[in-house]
Length: 620
Image (cartoon, rainbow, N blue to C red; front, side, top):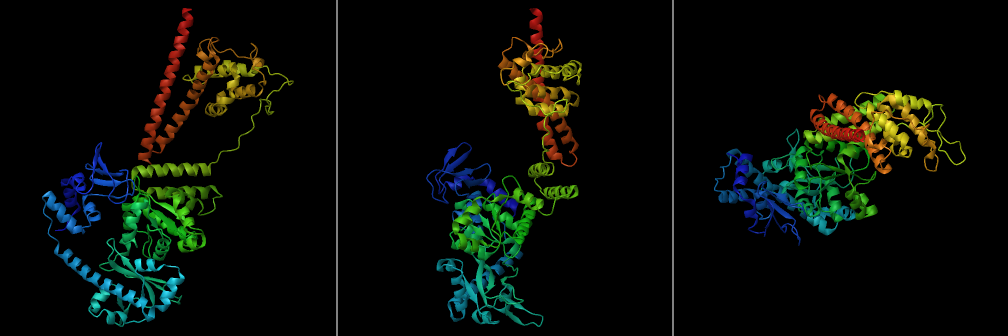
């Protein structure tokens, strides 16, 4: 049988991770966890934590993260099976016998790695030999240092169809072809796959050569500029990231991993001192490659060319990532200046220009919004509706319900702000249609609310629930007109929500605009101030109340009048979209109902104050 995920889960459950780690790292208790100095990077202040309940360790300094198995591999340096065997011995478990079929495949892979490692040595030797002169000149012209060329294993494949069989005669044709080094045509002729190309080894996460990439020196019609090994028992391009074995340790130090479009971009960054870069291998990022990236950091940085092709590549990556998004798992996007790849940018503007771009990437949602917004002209209602449809189609691909709900709300808000911008405010006009102007010394002094407004106040009857409060508020503003300007926006919203009250609210605005710059004596006359109904008894209407306190209570009354209908309307809209978005609707309903309950409590408190005031006056 094979080592199944269930077997590994049982193994982890039987191992106390903190005890395992404490064999080589000094840990101290920190609540439910253990902490100490990280063994993966130099530090003086502990940022390395071990959680036995969750069965993982994590360093907040360098990002190192893993379980008991990865601890044995990454920190102790064991191979995977050796780590499994040692942990199984500690846990008193038997290691499952290997599957014969899998065991045979593993043996074949080991043999094929012998082929690729030998081929790598041959290519390196050829680069230093007589036939490699043009390749050496090309690499020097590209500005790659000798150290980088040695580190990345540059080589040269001679322009010879039968070079490998002669150089690697210890391996038969079947093994050479199985490793992707040889191919054959319809006539059965066998030949070297890589000829006349600068060669780069492609390595797995353990640094073993499993495939190759080759680049021609000069453009030739009908010949691909880059050529990668085909998929083999060793190499699956959709599950491999170029430079992963070097970038993973660097990413622990930087807390970042950069994804560029090709391996030459990776090497250009490394040549400039940016070591935490990887690249896919001739294809768009796959789900498995995204999972590899997320094992290193929560938000990998994807770096694309600034042209249209780079933008399309970014959207392909985003489309792949959306179904896999989860809390604390996303992508960020860097767009290079148009026409420049990382090597060009670094040569033209220096490493600092590249680091500046990497330090401020765009978020995934920003990139998605901008791409779809700019995809076509949005000059008609139909085009705008198409934008919303495209955005919601992306949202529907997200599997995580919480992330999906938040994306729907955020993109809906952005669309609403874009499609329904605020209209310019009409200048406030009097009932005669003339614009209001603030009174100044020497101008005709106002006489307060008009007779019509006072008649409207006494005769106005809104809904029974808010009738008394609304009358009191209007009377309160007539008494404290200096407070009207502070609540202009709220009163405008109230006028929209309660059309029958709009004429009186407009009269309040007129009253505020006509105030003299001196204290408001001009509207304090009996003639100018409407008298509220006898049953309206609020503190801000009582003559003995402190003016500041009265204005504060008046402000709360306005807030209550505006908030409740707005919350009720929002709740109705949320309930209406329950079928299309049950998770988001339910969460929003819960929030809105809680706010409504809070408003109800405030209304009750107002009612109690009103009753107390009335009782006190009766007693007097």
